[in-house]
Image (cartoon, rainbow, N blue to C red; front, side, top):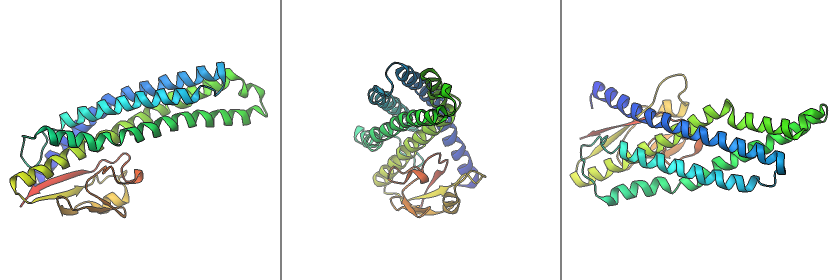
Length: 252
């Protein structure tokens, strides 16, 4: 790709990702608010006795949301195949979904556990405050604190982080897998290039990876880890959360 083609391609990819992310950010934030209400109401009635059940329900709803996000991203990125092959059999599409869905259970469980543990932390903090001001440890005050911490302003940034990270992962797995299959079918040698968003928020490891080129299938060295593409499911959270890097594809 020329510089102009690459810039146009990157803008297109990020625009599609942003549209999906914004849609699911709203859905995820609504779920966080719902769970905040469930936890705070439950605390007033039964203390922490029902927190485990609430966490399970929260995990299941988050899993459903992430599954919907994954399926939509796979479909949206079907036309954005940089190698040029547009026809894929069901096996390829199923393979993409299998790669992504295998991580949904763990991701949703982690999100749900973080939500509930945040509530537990808030309760502990309110109990400490209650030692000098008994009002702070009253059930209704504690419940309000839980609701505000989980479903308040913080829920916006948390929901956006989840939506962006999961959309970015689904988009990159979809594109990379399709390009890899296209290369096999066509016999073309496909070169992939790591393209970082070189602004004030980019990680140092991703900035240093900018411009690295590999034959498709060979890993990049990013932040001390081998990664096939941005948001590689096998990479650490520190290398994937809120990543905005894109892969450029070319043939030789």
